[in-house]
Image 1 (cartoon, helix red, strand yellow):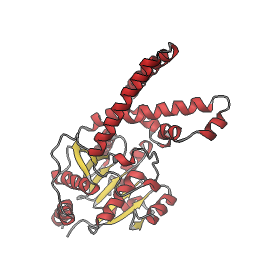
Image 2: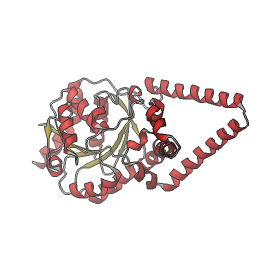
Image 3: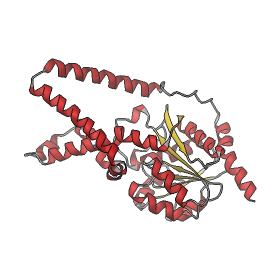
Image 4: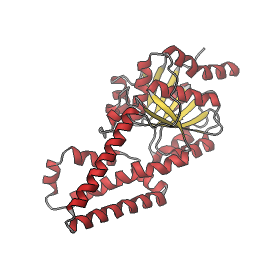
Length: 324
């Protein structure tokens, strides 16, 4: 007997892409899911994310051997409270929500049983320019040749963690373990601060004279730089660790002030040199992302689909048998 059902609570780009990848692997899973927006559930079913729609959060929780959570920061407390008594004893709760430290705390507080593992699948290099976050942007190879950050609860069974590693292999990602709170701190520098900077840019444009014409002619650069506003988690992230957010904003402001001073002094040579250096560094970063050659762990062994399936679901099977 093996695990059969993977449930998704909260369907968006990341969770939907995981569902697509699991279905594409063709390893005998049924993917079910629910979302507060029923139109999103219908779309997910139409584009091949789900095998079965479900209108009930608790129905998904009770049926799932592996439960994938992707909920906004403002809803995390309520969702964990709602599902805490209904997660199966053998089930693995894989949390892709944005705040890992908070997820760990809420899991400890509300989950009566099951095994909590926080993860963050890093986008493939080919997907970095796509700022969309909705289910329509989902793709089965969204995390191919990338990294899966894994942050398990200290109470999680080691085999539950192995199952999560094998999930990453199905996604095409290399596992990378780190502390949940360290991860949250790092994300303020590469997610929260850039998104707030884009928000400030959008606000500055919309308050300028002739802003309607500017927006009419704005192109991909403006759209990509302000894409962070699509995240409903932005406000929660900014206040989650206010000190870290303020430190990053202060650092960015210092850089902007320096750049402004050089421009005002007509120091074109220095500005050009700095921008060229940054362009080189950015290209190096993108190249490393494409090659995925900076991960400081041994490469995962190549496994066949059957091998992955047997390892991935052996844990849930044993737990079910023990329960019986």
